[in-house]
Amino acid sequence: MFPLKPRRLLRLQLLAVVPLIGCAHDVSQSTLHPAGPAAAEIAWLWWIMLGAFTGVFILVLALLCGAVFRGPARVATTPDGEPRRGSEPPLGSTGFIVAGGIVLPIVILTPLFLFSLRTSASLRQPPEALSIRVVGHMWWWEVRYPEQGIVTANEIHIPVGQPVRLELASADVIHSFWVPRLGGKRDMIPGIENEFWIQADEPGVYRGQCGEYCGTQHANMAFHVVALDPAEFESWLAARTEQRAEPEMLERGRGFQIFMSAGCGECHALGATRAKGSVGPDLTHFGSRRTIGAAMLSNSRGNLAGWIADPQAIKPGIRMPRTYLPADDLLTLAAFLEEQE
Ligand code: CUA
Image (cartoon, rainbow, N blue to C red; front, side, top):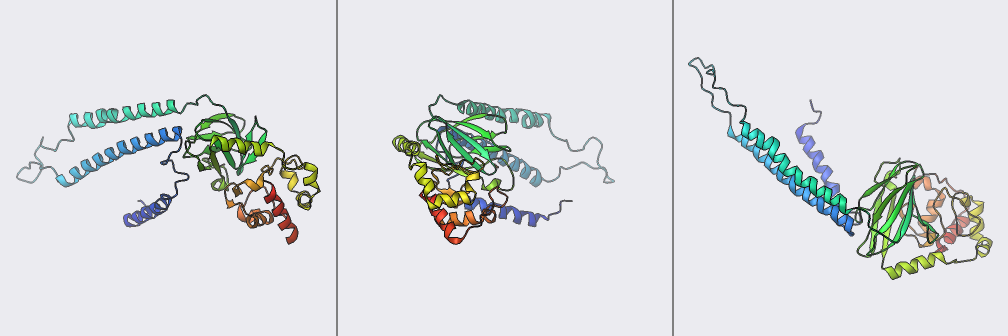
């Protein structure tokens, strides 16, 4: 027996719908609000499938209602009330079985199959200019612009109106790269280099999310794609390629000394300074990033100080340990990192 009573089950189903209603107004990660050509193709296929299957659902319900309300077939009986031999109700006509069980599925599934083939073909990678390398880590995203020598994290800046080629890899377990409004989903598999592409037609900030369960903080492995007008994108690139401050100058400051003595440089790199760690995100232009902890917190000095002091309280299980610093040093360190634009 099914352990849930029907009414209880219905209540649970209604409860499950409530969070979905909540999703409706925030479209920053909605597949149904495509903002690029590949995502538009996928959304189009989704609507066609929804339409076809809604039709099938209604048809099945109609047949079910017909069967329920038609009532039992009359059976001729003998004077004793026994059914007369040869008068049992027919199990169903052959024509109905052939039409409903063979012809109808072929008529419905063949066009859907052809549509999905067409969608797959249109998702093929176009020739492109810009290449970006994205490496999945538990639980953040390393982002590299190999030709420009830029390294960043959890934020991918792209120019609008052109396809961007992505090289996808993983540093540990299987992750999956997914920006629902800009394209499909592609796995990041250890030891395998995958290729993918996205395109944004409008400037904006598009949220991405790891699409493959990869451990306790999988749900908090998010990122943003920032699509900029080509000119703005060029100036973004230029601002990152030019050397902001001489490494010697940076290293002489109090902030950098705290950074090193607290051990941050063991895991994080910082521009051309002697901080060269590669376990955690590169912090070279950290101050210009929108978020902390792979899109968990907005990037403010207060949030950053809290994060440095006890990242395990915010995102349990990550590799960054607590940092025991006097309050003054903690605030100086947070201010120093916020200055690294
Ligand atoms: Cu990475 Cu889920």
